[in-house]
Amino acid sequence: MWWGVAAALLANTLYSLGFVLEKRALTSLPEVSIRQPARLLRLVLGSPLWIGGSLALAAGFAAQLVVYRTLPIAAAQGIFVSGLVLLVLLSARLLGEETTGRERYALGAILLALLMVVLSLREGADSVGRDAPYPLVLLVCVPSLAAGVWLYGSAERRARNRHRRPTTGVEYGVAVGLLYGVSSLAIKGVSGHLTTDGIGGAVLDLLSSPYPYLLLFTGVFGLVMSQAALQRCRASLIVPVCTTVTSLFTAVLGTPAFGEALPHDPLRLALRVAGTALAVAVLLTMPKHDSAPQPTAPAEELASP
Image 1 (cartoon, helix red, strand yellow):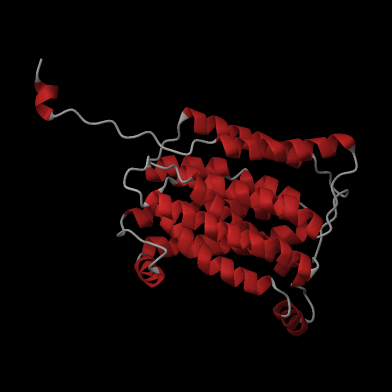
Image 2 (cartoon, rainbow, N blue to C red):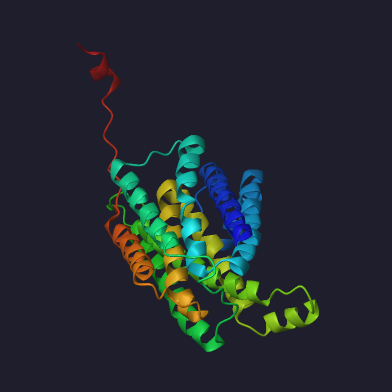
């Protein structure tokens, strides 16, 4: 169990560093768009800083495989979301991004919600699922992918309105979070197929499952969608929203899909349900728009007595 906790903390660090490095690289690149994916990939692959960020994310993915083999889904999500604090600190230090007081309170409430989820766990009492019925996985994942792509397209159409208010990117975060939620379930499924013996048979078994194909879809679309969103919005807000949606999606839908039962103890069950409800409520109340920039007074006015 403690190996899983250590791997989750390592994944937190790698994911936070990866997102911040990619955001910093994107700020120096021309504007990218999901309507020109080939151009987007050509631009980001020409940036050593972006490549460094993507390698950090890939290493976080490898650590996540270890996590899902040793921890229940709900426990893993609680630890993953705690990495939001590190992300905000890195965003302030490396990107110069500042969060508003309301956003800081929201992040604090999210951490409280996930702490409640973690407190609902008890070593030895929570089983770790290895696989889920494939029809059930597809029933959960396919509509979620469609909803994420539709929501992202809707946010893009509103963003092209020249009279729009500056957006914080919550819609982008929710859309990408749905895709990464599906990716998280796919990673969970892949981890259950990784065995120490019979590697050839394990690979064939894995290829006969939907997990590698879900990973391929979410990897390609998630890459394109997340880069365009990161370039337009603050990483210190869009990534926490994305992470929260991913974690809630994985915990709420992945727990029953992989046969990891909810706690039988009333107190532990109340903590888990209340923590999930609080995180959802905070997400729904987060600000959807940034304050419009205030006009700067002309130099002559500033110089006049």
